[in-house]
Image (cartoon, rainbow, N blue to C red):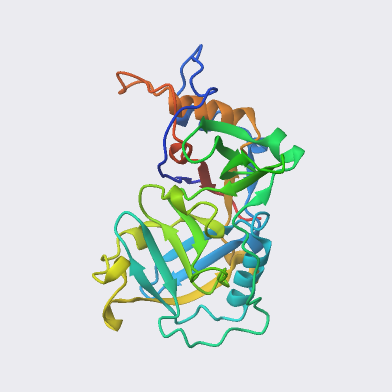
Length: 303
């Protein structure tokens, strides 16, 4: 039995393909129900983090290894070394982010961590990328916003005539905390978006993944009362018991998830359905915000 999870979030504007009228209007649920196995891709165990809070609640994070390989390698090495065990959630800012790391800022990093990782705030758009890009909206921060390789992304022309892309700060996306430039962060301090998509952060911070299940354990935490939502007292911080890569867990215990492929007709139909809601809706919008596509992600049977 597969259980379905939907990621949510927010920017704005309209998608040309989303505005196309439907000959036979479908609901997003009906589109999902009609999918086949080929319309989904599994999340690789080496790209899945399992973060366990001190309360026992678990948060599952998919790593975007293809877009931030150096930072993701750091995160994997930190998890393998058990470095995240015993750190805490130190910041909860309403309608913005939850942030976690070593509150003392004195915990030594493993030797395997690259302390001068490249920015990885954007990436070169290849011809293959452009061909595979599914545009959902135009304008608003970037000329084109949509999905690439299953991730919310945007791209724009550069001065050299090429195009550069960036991942988007949708709800549930995970990024790397950093100081001022040229600091790029190591992955020892991470955050996730828990509010309206703060797209002004795009191209300014390395996005390294997204939460696929369990975000409510973070978004429901008490808000910090200090500047930027930081907790002012040590006892306010939520402890993190452990962070493990699924690939390091016993095979029988590895969680399994599937993501709807965004290079499929099923995904295009899903976007149209999200843009042209029926039933309860009196006036379908005819468009959908890129972060409000709510890319389907579901539990899968373990191998």
